[in-house]
Amino acid sequence: AQTVTQSQPEMSVQEAETVTLSCTYDTSESDYYLFWYKQPPSRQMILVIRQEAYKQQNATENRFSVNFQKAAKSFSLKISDSQLGDAAMYFCAYHSGGGADGLTFGKGTHLIIQP
Amino acid sequence: EPEVTQTPSHQVTQMGQEVILRCVPISNHLYFYWYRQILGQKVEFLVSFYNNEISEKSEIFDDQFSVERPDGSNFTLKIRSTKLEDSAMYFCASSERSGSSYEQYFGPGTRLTVT
Image 1 (tube, each protein chain N blue to C red):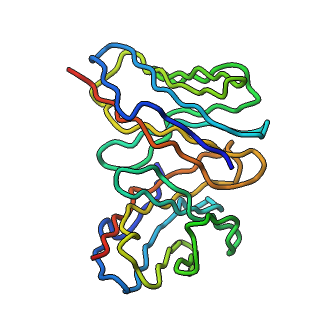
Image 2: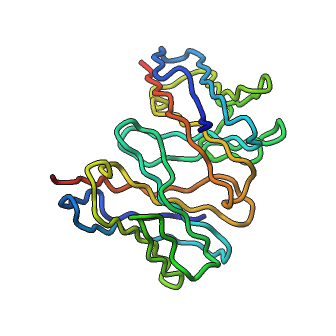
Image 3: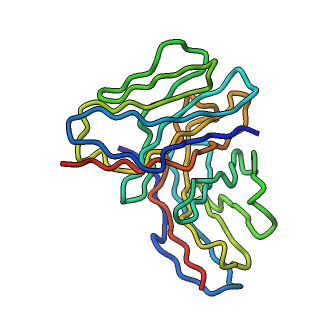
């Protein structure tokens, strides 16, 4: 079974600074997808960014980018120019490319933005 | 923008009672999911549903749980005899198709409190 590990229960960053959230995963599959979801206090899960394992190029979405290291099974999220609205729980998630439907989530990192 | 909706937002029930949580997926989506998040813990996959049958289910999804698409719009999760440990946020999600090239869109969740 796949596992997703987020080793940082909480991170704090000054507004406008850059922060990196860590995620590692364990899988024996070669075809899979990785995601970062944001969960603000409203509790709704919002997709931030996705990465296909077969792509070597790291995904970027505006201020959000990932550092995908397939051999190391590492998938970190970098948030540049942090804003107060970025404060939330961030969950790393894994999806098998082999047809299994459910996402496997990590335990999450609580991101605090200091004004 | 289309969104997944869930009702009620908060449900309080007594142990042993049956509860039905309701979801309206995005209208052109074909795949539906339920996830659970116990307070302070990670989001856990419960079940996926396609073409009027369960596609995949986790170990959590035991005989106390059932899912149904009673009409063309609703997708329900029923817990037959609630236990204290069923207290959690329950998220519904939907996607156009399976596989990770299609995002799973999450609803705002239903907070279930079992007393």
